Amino acid sequence: MNTIKNIAVLTSGGDSPGMNAGIRAVVRAGLYHNLNVFGIRHGYDGLVNGTIIPMDAKSVANIIQRGGTILKTARSEEFRTYEGRKKAYDNIKNLNIDALVVIGGDGTFTGASKFIEEFDIPIIGMPGTIDNDLAGTDFTIGYDTAINTVVDAVDKIRDTAESHDRVFVIEVMGRDSGLIALRSGISTGAEAVLIPELEVNYDAIMKRLDKTRKNKSSRIIIVAEGDKEGGEVVAEKIKESFPHYDVRLSILGHIQRGGRPSCMDRVLASRLGVAAVEGLLEGRKGEMAGLICGQVQFTPFSKAIKHINKADENLTRIVEILSL
Image 1: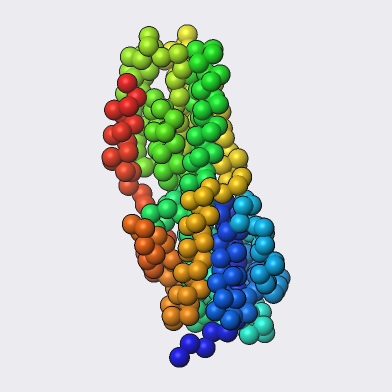
Image 2: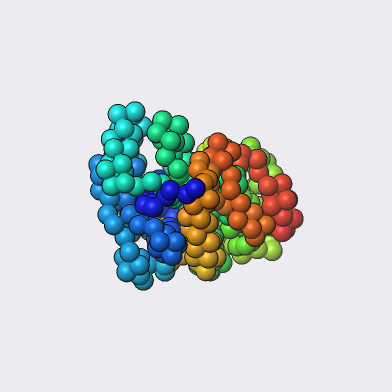
């Protein structure tokens, strides 16, 4: 028999577009199922410090289109300790909160797993990260918006690159995963894409640039920030090999995390928010709600937090074929 009457939702780790849509879905799905819903501000830090507020339908009105997270997010050193987690447990018990929905990435789910292990609190996770580096879902909340932001920026950079016959090295986010770089590289016609999962073959890159110099007025090299050398080193190596090229470096940085979420991210977050609440009511815990082949699936945290550290060979092959 289900005994869950009160639930709470938090966002943790790096923000991603669509988190607000996820919060909205959790709150409204909870209300639909006659639950009392709370919001925890500043992630696990708010759980430790007791910044927990009641939420209703009005509190999530007009947020589905907003980037960032209305509940804020923060990393919590105190929650890493047993004493901090005990404070968090006491805070939710004082409010009779029976279960949690956490939106974030691998660090968020690692913390949730520890909390379940020690205090047996039902927790369901939602994948909120622009890196798309979690197992158990085809796409994470925020990834689609992030790559569209990159594509828009690179399209604009190519305009000026063509006007001046320049080579642009563009560094995008992706500390441990090259998926932002790969997909945005294909969709912007990049000459090369450098990602953390693969060793850099500079000889191949230089040969490609040399081969295309007569029939291309602009060249785009996309580098994931987690690549072993980074955009600055790549730009310097190209200058050394081709001193006659006008080489420029552009680091897109945190612009990739912001902005209005795409339709895909809004729908994804909405579906997973409803699934998370209903998963709790079904008695699930310690699992992430994800979307695989268009269907909601639940994956244990222990499997979801394992990074996808192998490059998609099909995507890397497409980059090479289309760079001619």
